[in-house]
Length: 359
Ligand code: PMV
Image (cartoon, rainbow, N blue to C red):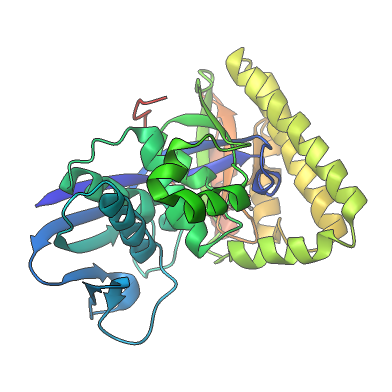
């Protein structure tokens, strides 16, 4: 049996702008995981995951490739990961085999509500890591990220893939997304292996040094957010707001480049300034687009951070889920934590998942 895990993530800055190819963002991997166990099987494969309830999803192969043994095809990252790796395996003339996958996640609370720590990305990365071992593909982290990206955009063409990069590479990273239309076309024209070998316009990933004088504090609002709903709403509205949208992209680039420069210089005040700037930039975007990025709970989470000289903002699409705070190691957090408790914001004790190497 093969057991692998992939970490969850938090966006620190650059959300929404990162959806456009080449726009920078900063993310961090956290020490909660999705685990995948792979057991070799014969004649058919299966996927056991809480998202399918008690019944596993059973698959086999025919001339069309992977098929499910029932009619409903879920919109699914695990299946897309399997299909993408299987296509790669067949392009490399490796004999296909069968396997049972069992998926479990620490990225939900006990009642199954998602924390918003990138569970779809972590399950994609973990599935690819398990198959990398099973077929002994010896893929580098960069190749695994590319496979994960190919699998993800087959399901969700607008996804930036920042969460995949954080989950694959670990630690703090600066990330900008590839042009997904180009990547989808590359897969169509050259297959999965050909697309992986090509350079992807806009894509870049770089390791960042964590700020030595600051700690990361994470609050969970308990409000479920739908990233795809928020991103689609913004996409619909931005055509009417084209000029402000380009201002937003420029302002976001300014904030994120400031953040990266401050991290490179280990300048704690600069980091906090950039995060406050990123919060304001998202608020201005939302004031124009009105998609509901900073909910009242997220506003409270960030205001209480600013009141103690720290910096806080929503993480990811907003609309609920988590917010991040960067505060000095010696900051007195008692008032902040009391205020969070009063506002039903749960403090998630998360540590940064260290770099996996490969960058
Ligand atoms: O809500 P999350 O944590 O999945 O992050 C979404 C971030 C966006 O920039 C809004 C979308 C994306 O694909 O990067």
